[in-house]
Length: 223
Image 1 (cartoon, rainbow, N blue to C red):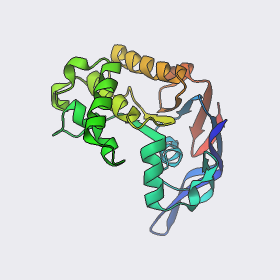
Image 2: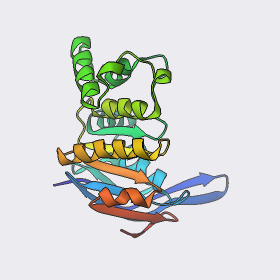
Image 3: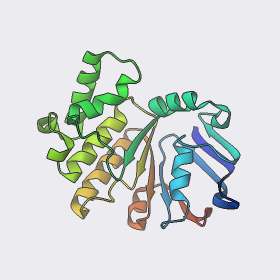
């Protein structure tokens, strides 16, 4: 079943009198349960592509479908609801809130879905145990290692049970061993049915993917 589709999508930014084509007519089809890699060097357009597939941005031209719904026609508030329920985000820089402990960081997305506090805490605890942080729940981000912070970020991404996990350079700030552990978690999630979209400049990580899109100058040049 197709969960995400980009048809002839372009993204053009206007800087003064100059137009910059960040994405140039790409086509992407992602099925439920795929492990997809969007690969390319800096400036290839992969970050813009990530924003488009993650419903963080809309296309200048072309169509983007999520579960057969054309998101080009949706309001920002509707897009925010989709992001909150359908897509879980994992970032290279973790994006944890420094003043909150691990448990509170993981539970936070459920607040925006109006889920009662006792349910939020119960689910957040279960997810932190799942990613091996049972003894670190009440530690703040500055008390955690990079790998532990990324595990918190993974738990947070899972908390609203999204269909798609979008991982943007999830091992970029980690040593090789810790990075391999994080990729192992993503692989296990994929085996359990989660659709994974990995954005990376590291071609070594693509061996885990069943579908690869290589970007250069805003175009897909291979896979």
